[in-house]
Every structure is written in C-alpha cells, then in structure tokens.
Length: 542
Image 1 (cartoon, rainbow, N blue to C red):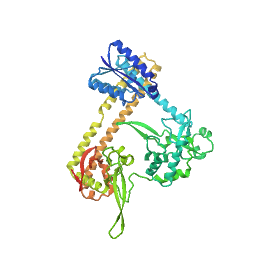
Image 2 (image 1 turned 30 degrees about the horizontal axis):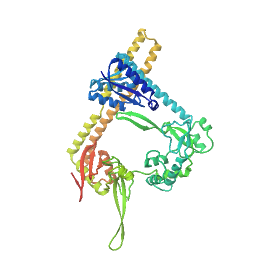
Image 3 (image 1 turned 120 degrees about the horizontal axis):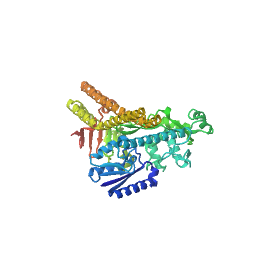
Image 4 (image 1 turned 90 degrees about the vertical axis):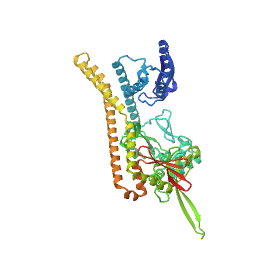
C-alpha cells in the first residue's frame, strides 16, 4: 500500500526539540516496513493543536489524496490526527471520496471502541485547556504576569518571567511618543519622527499608527497611585506594593470564539479583566492624560479642508494591495494677473501603503482627485439603483453566494454525532439498570460523554442561530430594496455626502482603484456593478 506517515506535536517546545516527532516517525517506519508498505511522504505538523483543522500538514495530505498518489494516511495514535470527533468525521468523509483511509496504530477495529478513544481524546483536551486557563487566571490574580511571546513595549521579563521590569532602552521611545503627542504632533507625524530618530519599533522596520495609538491608551504606562491600585488588585497583592506609582497590565481582556467562518477574537467586559501591577514607566500622569485628550476624538474619516469624504472609511480601496485609501488635501498658492494671491485646496485619495512605504510597499502611486472620483462613483451607483432589473439581479447573485457559504454538512454531521452519543448514553444507563455496570462506573463514563454532548448541542445551536441571522439579513435586504425603489428618485438626489456614505454602506459598496487608471465598483457580496475608466478628458463609464 502507498502510505503517508503523519505526525503532530502540540506545542512549539516539542516542535523545537523534535524528540516526539522522531519517536513517532521511528514507530511508523518500523510498522510500515513490517507490513511491506511503500512510504510516499512523511508529513509533520509541529506546534499545532489537535483541535484545529487548519494545519499545513493536513492540507498536504489532502493534496496527495486528490492526486491519487496515496492509499492510507497513518499515524501513531488517533489523537495525532484530531482531538475533535467532528473534524475527524468530516476529514474521513473527504478522504473517502478519493479512496484514502485514515489509520492509526491504536485503532481498535471496532466502531464503538474507536469512538470511545476519540471521545476520551477530546475530553482530555478540554480538561487540559480548562486547567491551563484556570491556572493562568489564578496566577494573574496573584499579581504575576502571564508571559507571552513578547512583553509590552518598554518592558522586559524578569528571569522567572513572572514580572515586568523596565527596559530603559525601549522605554525612552515610549516617553518620546507621549511627549510628541502631548505637544500637538499628529499620530502620523509622531510615527515618522520616532522613525527618523532611530527608535526601534516593536515589530517590523517602521512605526505604525495603530501601534502609537495602542501605546497612548495602554494603562501599563499610566501611573496609578496606591489608592487607585487598592481598587484594582486584591489586598494580598496590594500588601506587596510600595507607595510608588505603578502601571496596570490587564489579563483576560479577550477571548477566542468559534464562528461559522472560523475563529475571531472578541473583547471581554472590563469587569472580567484581571489587573496586574507593573513598574512605573516614568511618564508623568499629566503627559499621559494630555496625549490621550489630543487623539481620543481622532477619526479616520475626519474632514480635511472642511469637506466630507464620501468614499472614506474603507469604501475605496487599493486594487493592488487591498489597503484602504486615505483622504488627503494639497494646498496650492496661485497668483492672479492683478497680483492677488489665492490659496486652493485640492482633495484627493491615495493608497495608505504607498504613502507610508513608497513603491516598495505598493505599486499604486496614482492619486485620485476626490471630487471627480466621488462624482463618477455616485453616477454609477445612482444609475444602478434606479434600475429594478439590476437590483433584483444583484440580490439574486448575493443570495446564490450566501447559499454557498452555508455549511449544511457540518450541521448534519453534528446532529448525527449527537444522535450517536445520546444512544450511547442510553445504552450505558441500561447497562447500569441491568446490573453489569456499577453506579461509580456509570458516573465516570457519563461525565466526559455529557460534556461532549453539551459542546455539540451548543455548536448546533450556534449554527442554527447563524442560519436564522442569515435569513433575517436576506429579508432585511429585500425590505431595503423595496424601500429604495419606493424612495427613488427624489430622495437620492437630496442625499448629502455623509448620507451617501451611509447609503454605500447599506449597499455593501466597495470601490477598487486600479493601476490602469480604472475603478472597479462592487456591491452586495462582491457582485460587480461597474468599471469606471479615467480618460484624458475626464471620467467615463464602461
């Protein structure tokens, strides 16, 4: 048989030492030689969790399966493939379509036995995760830092990695940033200034505006008095602090939640944050508060030259790098024949990546005249929404694409697995009633089984809710289209610039500025609406 050897280790540390990988490969080689199998490839996923299907090794397995080059994917243990019963079922089904079998050396050869092994692996992962998170939370409540890959900029870890200490070489840059912002320098100007002065950024080669904002609003640099710390930390932690000011680093601020499209990071309520004291950064409190006041009302779509930007806030984007175009204004001085001087403002859009990094970052060097661009985009959109045929066509295309995003197979697999687990639970109860199974053994087996059933029920509930939200969104869009048709054309002509921007948002409009002097307009779910080309004497639609 043509065989792939698949190995996985779950932490970066195991991946670096390589011991576990070597041990697994040695065992697999010995077994395949005894069976007389032909090893096609050895694939290792080092540092990946068994709960995630997003692994490069699994993608490679699927590529080989699709090409017909393999018959068996073999691992040492079943949990090396997955610690999620659901993902294993889906992957097995996908591989079976290409005639490929998943095999582990600890397979029992019996469906129920293999199912129990998978259930235990999933339950074990959940218990490890729960204990790990609980331990980190308790550690933070004791006033200790939860060490990550990098500390907060300007700080370093103590040798035991439980506390922060000030890194003076980097903290100088932090103090300089606060000083510049508090003195009235813009965020962009500050980033440029600290770059020119040679301060190393946290990552990359240049300081970024989001990094500057994060530093300004990070409480790690805000000095807190002893009385303020008393309201944030426990009495035991407070007793270990002296009377000097301290910054505050917060743990448990975010959580990773699963959605239909994958995972996303969600901010937790501040009441759940755990405050951990850190050394004073050496920035005066007045400077911190002044810097925060200076930029707290900054918005990406602020008016420059007292005009409204209709395509700001990410509606118009670069067709080369996908970055949003920024709104800028140039000032020109013109002298008339009579000697009077007049100042003109020329608003335009430009790629943010090109503005920051030049041609090395993005080849889109063209500036877009704001007034001309906004006028032509509005004409194209207005023409489209005045046509009922084009509206219905766009809605139909959107619905077709939404239907392709619905993962009905996933919900079907969850429901099938729930039915199987519930049947197994009833079987265990029947065994206990008949006598072969004691109450203690029944309780021990039901705990992981009930936890898995509850997890699948929650996931199925989430999928159903997302289906309902999707249907509600489609109904809302139909209502919106009916309202648009009823309000045209007089209401459209009366829209102001901010109202046009909101109108574009409701239509899901995206404008891509291309290097060939064209604009691609898309609406709803990336349904192409129009292509606008810039000719020598103005703009025209195609």
